[in-house]
Amino acid sequence: MTARFLRIAIVLGLISAVGPFAIDMYLPALPSIGSDLSASSGAVQMTLLAFFLAVSVGQILVGPLSDMIGRKAPLYGGLGLFAAGGVGAALSPTIEWLIFFRFVQGFGACAGMVVPRAIVRDLHTGPEATRLMALLMLVFSISPLLAPLSGSIIIGHLGWRAIFWVVTGAAVAGIGLLAFFQAETRPPEERVGSGIRTALTSYWYLLRDGRFLALTFISGFGISSFFVYLSGSSFVFIDHFGLSPFQYSLAFSFNAVSFFAMAQLTGMLTERYGLERVMRVAVAGYMGLMVLLFVLTLAGVDSVEVLMGLLFVGYGFLGLVMPTTTVLALDDHGPIAGAASALMGTLQFAVGVLAMAVVGYFSNGTVLPMVTGIAGCAFAAFLLAQFAAGRPDRAAREGAPAE
Image 1 (spheres, rainbow, N blue to C red):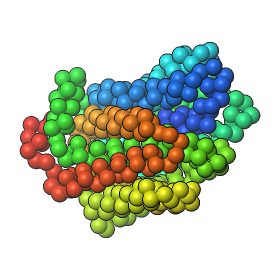
Image 2: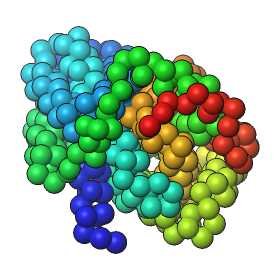
Image 3: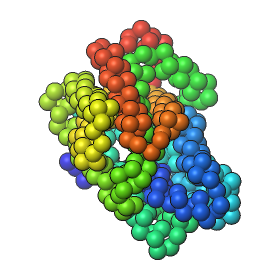
Image 4: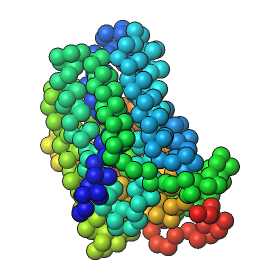
């Protein structure tokens, strides 16, 4: 592994982690925000939903923009907007202002989620891209590993507003990393012909590519299962099982370790067995474990050890699913990698928000609604994997945007 390869992974991973850090660090603050701003739990949850909605909408705009003007400029703009939203959130006098500035933050965060994937595609394809994507995810894992723990500590000593000052500082640090350690990967000669018309043509082409959509929704349902866990786990672990907020943070980090540790094996496994095979086996393993968890829960097994154990192993399989599906989906779309990455992110977040809303409607503080949502997402990903495997959808590729 070259020093350049490692440097790119660290820089892109840290930039990608800025947005999720603002989610994971923020979760322990929700009760304090409601109390301090005299807001209902539903209003406080709107601050989280506003962030997700902004990320979903913003990606569809940022991706093609990075094809038109290069990768670094949208990252500068996104990190700057994120920092501005962080300052506004820290100073918000009411829940309405906080919801607004969380939306601004989410809109800024979307660049860090879209553009790094396009940069990976600019530089590599196949197993090399998978290895870089997995290493990027290892750096990215700082967020779910450290954010909940550090967030609970900061809230306990400095209050919830300090969270937003910390994530604003992280965005400023990201701007510095981008300026000094990341080169532009889409030179001017490759931007020729890129424009709004090209972006619309690219989206229309991608929406007719059945294989791209299937791979996107495989990872989308994988992410959605984690979103369901994200939105319901605090109620299940703290209210239902009686864990303290600190113990909950440890449990949250425990599952993240499995996910990101297994993601590091994707480069080795795909070189030996191929991207398609690793993806299909990982999806099947994840689905099998989550369906088993659902059946046990339905049968009356109500154990925190069983829940954490099966989620730990299951999220290990999911750690193999995410980088492989991302690389497979982008491999054939180098000329429009920004648009493809953006559409992928938008569709994934749309499915995630929908899954959160549906499971949230049925949530009652017990394990079953959360586990049902996770198992349902895993089963949907498994069904799509059967469709996506095999040869690329050549018919849809007729008339593809030219490089």
